[in-house]
Image: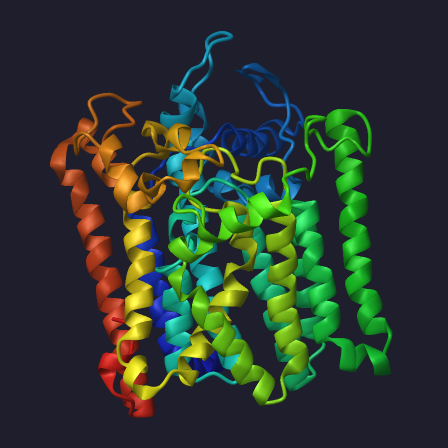
Length: 485
């Protein structure tokens, strides 16, 4: 309790901003699945929690019969606490009548609305809080931490990802926690932070074996001065990675009959030429990270600030690990990521680059500092608005699911996504042309009264952010217009 009280007093502005983000994320929940992968991850959790089985009960047919999720087990385990709280809603899970495409599986799951969708909002909010804490741990001010939280939680694809249902946001949370734990250990020497770091490596690999494994070299680099003197520190992190890999192989055997069978099709490979994937993932209107996260340009300035202050290991880790992930994802055979918003394979790195972007605000000339961060933040928000208002399954996902299509200017969501929105209220349970927010979807059942929840949460989010800004203003004496509001 003492630690929590100290944390609240030291990071009150960051906590208020994070609670504001949580209210916002709950306000814009879709309450349904966006992909067959997300649906199967959820059904795997149902099977484990209610039936104690690795096989889906009942199996799902989607082009082919699906009896188990090929996503990491960690992506399903995140749902277990919510499922234990709402077992009485298990009877409202839709059942597929036969071998035919049935979108009621996506849109008609009441249990997912209560126990599943809020999990993604919580993951996004906690990751944003860790972004703020990481910024402070790197030497940033409260003001810079607020900018970092805003860049990540409002001005990056993490906003859209707070609606689910791919596992990358969970890996991002593990990355953020692992890096923050390393910084805290370096500052305090508290051994509990080493265990927190090891747990983040463990669960990251359990969620996505490849992207989770990228965290290990990053934390080993940050802990290098410590494990040179005490090798057991490195052994703990490597041991956590080995244990998670071992469990993953064991789970593969239980689900697919062989330890090395991860359930992916044989076509999975890293065959996209780098000269195709790299510029597309960076610059294309549909998937380019500079379009979806404009504040990324401040990362260079943030790295320069840290390098100049002697935090060179931190710079190498915070820049190097995201760079490796970006290059790897660019060469994936399906780098576009199927039907989704933005370049989702880069999402695990967003907390790290957002922290650098927040620190980068410090390096801006005063004439730019008063308006450029706000413009970059606004650019990210503009990108996210259609991603949280329109339904990805309404047409945008199918239209811009190829490399060539993503180079069209109308692939930029603020331009192309609105043409798939035709009305505010849904006309059926599986209507994908209406406003894709659960509070508006519920108007079909209970009328406009359901939107009161949306407006109440938006008002709470705005009030909490204003309070966070005022708290920072009183605490540091900086001019309030310079802060995200």
